[in-house]
Image 1 (cartoon, rainbow, N blue to C red):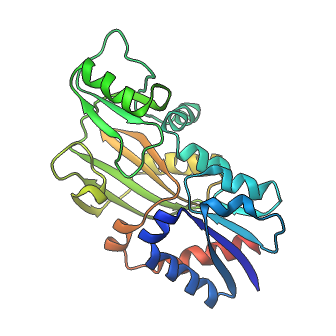
Image 2: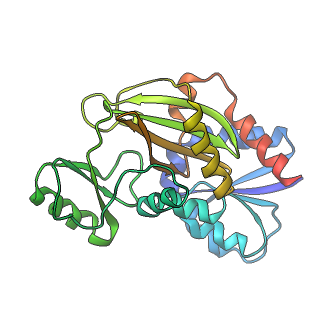
Amino acid sequence: MTVGWLFYSEQDAKKNKSFIDELIAEARTQQIELILKFEHEYNLHHHFDIDFVWNRTRNYKVALYFEQQNIKTFNNHLVNKLANNKWDTYQFAKKLNIPSIPSWKALPEQITYPVVVKSVSGHGGQEVVLCKTEQEVNQYINQFGKDSSIIQPFMPSNNQDIRVWMLGEQILGSVLRTGSDNFKSNYTLGGTIEHFLIPENLKSYLYKITRELKSDYIGIDFIKSDGVYYLNELEDPVGARSFYNLYDVNLPQVLISYIKKMLS
């Protein structure tokens, strides 16, 4: 039987217990033994009798460790590393000529307020603040850490963003998220979701990203401002709460089938 290790942080494993149970059960039906492991355990193992590792942590070193043992990983460590550093994500977008939000490590001399300050490693709408003064900017840069912060212009987007779930080069689904009462549109923070029809120019960006990264299961977030789609974030691991609320799809079956195919 094919054997794989599924890595989560302990905290995320508790929050995602039902999803993890569904993944393990679906894997069993497809003749795969999928075993939950915790992030802190990844380098305690030196003898491996496994076929793959699925890294659902935000620690790229988990995937890298097993890649160095010639074990197949989903996603590869470069995807995970990039997705968990917003500054690197925006440099990646520039390289591919994909529009991204202008970003600075320090305040430019000429700036129009408000601006947005983000931690480079924040996720789920956390560590993202709208600042109306230089004093506020400096406050949050000190809070997040000077080397861990970026500053961006506020991009009017009707409190909306677009989340697309990708599996390899397949589009699994897409939603338009609208924030409830502030500039953040992350669904877990409140707000609404609806199906979103992806235009062709946005599809071309999605395929560019996934082909360059050789990614497996990721989320890609865009905002639309003044008619232009800007890459906002890459998500690995990507959540699926809003996916489940809009799509009647057996996601564990789709994901496990993909892994099985990639291993064959």
